[in-house]
Length: 382
Ligand SMILES: [Zn+2]
Image 1 (tube, rainbow, N blue to C red):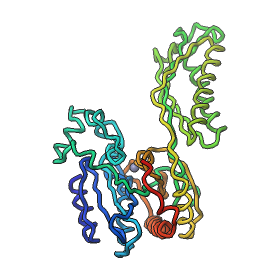
Image 2 (image 1 turned 135 degrees about the vertical axis):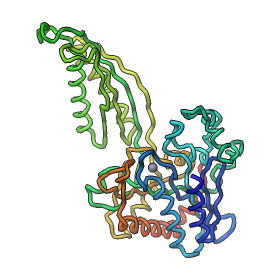
Image 3 (image 1 turned 120 degrees about the vertical axis):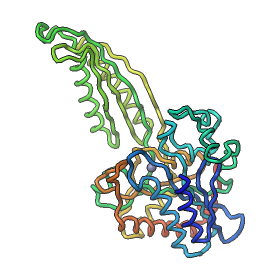
Image 4 (image 1 turned 90 degrees about the vertical axis):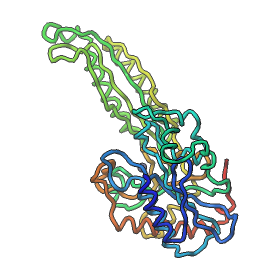
């Protein structure tokens, strides 16, 4: 990370912009406005990544922010641009994502500083070991006069490639439910127990998995996944007495997501009753959807159209720093097509043409925001 900071600082210095590292390990650089004390626009993404990663998830959004400054060629705008490279988005080390962006939003609290990695080192210790002062986290808070946050990011999915489009505006980051279901039946001999006298937990679970898939197909925008199944006792010649499954449901609307989960719980109970099984479920996670800012979404769509592409709006199924910053300032994202939909893998890629389109889109967006009285009158909601 230190080398990464040094490299990025060098790129920024070449543009006459100096960078600093805040107490949460985020790189921050301010490209000044026409006038001192002008409000600022944040543009950035994260610098960390996952093991065995690709080369674009996160970092591309920081590089694009720097490319935009470069393209401005010293031109000053009525707002400053603060480039941010977040330190810890993926949550690989501490199991908790968005540590860097939480510092800007003011939600990196004592509880989070006390979280440990697998070697017993806390976030607080790690910050100290890096040569930063965790007691100065409050100074990492975003400036009061922040107009908004824009993040370029690879889509990490196949949608834009399928539509043959290079870019999209993100309208919302999907909410997410994670549950565990256990179907209980009666284990018995696979040879001697007639079919009509069985209470087969796996057969019940299988019927329910079909229902999960059917419901997700019926409801536009819903994705539902049973990603894991374990059965007991787990032998070829034994009817399963227990089947344990996970359920992951995501949608841009919390109402639709919660209704779908309720429906699937009801369907599990009904079919369990009919089959002489019992079922119990527990909720592991229920995370709300985060809407992106409607004004910025509209401006991004216009900017995409200006590059000669058809504007498209989509929901992000994955979480991003923008969902943390959206708690405090109007936020929006621009997705770039991901060839093959492959991400979190060395095969992850982007095409130079799409990156060129993203830079053009960013420049149109800046021009539109400069010309927008509505935008310039905005101040930090917090
Ligand atoms: Zn990312």
